[in-house]
Length: 280
Image (cartoon, rainbow, N blue to C red):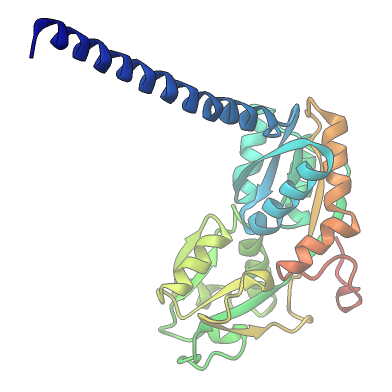
C-alpha cells in the first residue's frame, strides 16, 4: 500500500469515527431531554406538614397522607412512635403541625402541657386478646393472664395507649400483681407486640383489633363491660407554622373519605353504635 493510500485510509477511518460519535450524540440528546422533562413533571409539593402519629396508626396514616397530597398538593411527613415519646418530641422541638395519638388519654396529657387544643374523633382502637395459633395455652379471658407460668407481652404503660388500657383492665379485675409476674416484655410501640407474637415469643398479648394478623395468631374478644375501648383523636398543634394546611389535613382525616381509609385497615370508625357508651 502506497503512502498516499495509507493516508487516505486513515482519513476515512477518522471520518467514520466522527460520524459515529455525532450519531451517538444525537441519540443521547433526546434521552437527556426526556429525563429532564420527567423530572420537571414530577409533582413536588410546594408546602408540607409534619404529623406526629401513634405507631399503631401507621398503615392508615400512610394512605391518608398520599390521598391528601394527591387531592390538595400538600406534602405530609410523619414522626411515628409511642404517644409518650411523641409528646416528649413535641415538647423538645415545638415543631410540627398535627397530632394523632392512639387515644384521647394521650391527647389530654398533651393538652395539659399546652401542645394541643381541640380535636376531632376518627376511629376506635378496640383492645383484644391475641394468643398463639390454635391457642395452646387455652386462654379464654384476661383472668388467664394471671395463671402461673404464662408468658405475657404488653405495651409500655408510659409510652403506649394499649399499655395504659391493659393496666386499667387488670386493675378492674384485681389481677395486676399476678399478671405482672408473667410479663416477659413491655414494648414502646404496639407494632413490636405484633412482631413478638408473630415470632412465638409470648403466649398472649393485648393488641387492638386493627393489628390482629389472623393467619398467624388467634383472637379473643374482651367484653365491653371490662374493655377499655380507645377513641383516636386528631388535631392541630398549638405551635404549627402552617395552620391552614394543618387544619385542612385534620378535616380530611376526620371526613368520611378519611375515615373510609381507617375502615379499610380494620378500624371501627367513629361514631359506631356498638361503642356508644365509650366516652372520649
